[in-house]
Length: 355
Image (cartoon, rainbow, N blue to C red; front, side, top):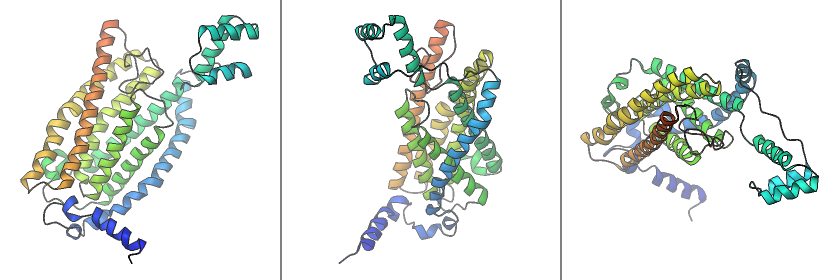
């Protein structure tokens, strides 16, 4: 009789089948010693590291970024509605309250209809994320993206595969990894894992599920590249994406700080970088390489299709967000005003350019 351990071992062997994950005539043992330098189990370190990053974010936003936001003139949350048992009950019953119900509440409380509406408006504002909180959130992301991009460029500057994408495949899968890249990859994975977790607590966006899919595909792609020793292509994809995200978060910060001219300038730079990296370099340089170069070394293996599925999913999300950006630009040109939470607008910002 086969025990539980034997069943789990069979399941593990079936999942990590050489024919699925590796090129033809390759086995996991063929990756040693290079593979031993970054065993797949090491990626579990990113889980506790993600919670450390979330803790660091909390203290940074509270004791560093919040005072900075206040110092540059960003207001805290507006006046709260005073507690009222009847009104609280009416508010929590449903988000939409009809005029008839408002009139009824006004008569019960001996208030004017305007006073009831004001209380309900203040009560609703309590559920919204304040401008200061949004500023701190974007400032945190800006600092992280800037650090990740800077460290990545320094770490990979002398790597030939950073400049010639085809080098990501030459000699594959026997690619050794040094300590700098090991730590860089672990920290990057931890950071994106922390973003996945914090998405459920941050400002609710209209493209929540698109961002959810983006984080899932990013983490899956990072994990996939780590396990299959594809850290070269994974690192290039990361740097390419983060280059635009730096300006995206900086533009949002300028908007919340009401620095209109600065916002306009950064947004213009962001749009140019976005088009170059997400709509040109990514599909015609990286994706084209991952689709074609591996085929020159042998027949495609199942993991090849899985890798490109993740890559194509990212491209679809790029096109979706490009549509939102284009929509925002057109609306702003028509109205002569700029504003709006770029790419992933808050669900509360119904008047913003991005809807």
